[in-house]
Length: 629
Image: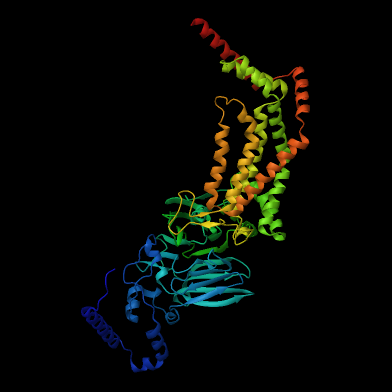
């Protein structure tokens, strides 16, 4: 770093500039009568006059939106000449540096006079992984700016000072921030916060600026935001941190990429969500924005290095004045990404959550979330996960029973299938043909065993998407896990040590879940592995080792609540398999039923007939080729 040294020339320069400013002030002194009449006002203006940038104001599309501008000390006359009526008005003395607090029992906001926007948003009831308070906005990570043309200049409200006025509307605190040219001509940001709400009303309007504001030029509302890191696992949090938005009508939603730089220009946007996994910063409008340019950038370049921010978001909204004035009724939301809270607003905000598409999202919204909500109200979070898993396992037990019966039938038929393989050894086509005939006659088929498993996939996938987004798991402990929304730790590697794809720690829940999956795979695929591997079929032995290994490595950094679910699910499945095998299914009875069924005439469906015909044709072609040889 370059060493700072005393510079005599710099000091002389400052003294010279100070002398010139004093001379200008002396030359612009008012008459003695004006001094007496305006004494108090002049003293206040001299002490509190805000300073502005000398450089021309530019679009809010770069890092300048997140850095403080250098300040100058200007005389009143200079202010008037430079920025005209927006910077010089009868109320300028009250438009000065400072912030106003707007809060209720769950949310605390600080709104700056400079720019009139929120510079701090604190969630009172939430803490991050280090136990510190959750701030969605703090230390310049948020920039909210109205850009417009006035008096042949391009102006940005972030550089101008608003006059605050705090009042009450019933129990709701109301803050009016006005950028004035006079008492009746202004731009206003109006904030209203209700008790117990993370959502606040926000109004943007202008009045009496027909001769000042150039409404023929485009007017933009820019919102740039950097999301703070709140979770212990930066990779896990960043995976569920994303910009989402809704189009007019509420039937269509879209999102930007969560892993790279992305940019989209959309029309008729009604809300946007700067999601930070378990927390959201949203802007909603009753009048759809005609055009919005969205940008998103992943700021996590190396997940092994501590980082302050996860992603940087941007939205540039084109505004449409009506009758020469701005009039937008909007809402802002700073709070949890919680489905139970979102659905109370009836604005399709649940689409801002990654609950899965199609049938998976439906299962989450109408089955899993309501049931888990009731359980978590009465039980500790870890016990609620176990009970939820048991309930869904019982619900799916008839499907699993059919799957196990099909496996038992295949096991009973194994001796006859081995005879077919021995009889037609070397003729794979004939083996498949005769095996299919045997299975059809006995009413057993590998396909019948697969179909029940396929029916369970929607529920399993819905649960997989539910646990990473379950806000009720945050900061909830169970056994050795201190936070079910993050990974559990039983051992941390020495500082600087890390295993690629695995991490710098050891989690116990994924290890136990991997063992349970391995045992389940051994029980469910053991009989199939004893059979000769058929061409085109997956290698079951390979899958038996791959699944537990995948769980062990990749779930080491996932939420421990998700690993607890997999552990519980597989332990229950193993128990159900043992009960069905030892107390419900009688293989001798199944064998007798198969032999009886084989004696009955069996009708083939269209698909079976077609397959049989194709196999017979292939067999005849093969025989013909052999004869020609």
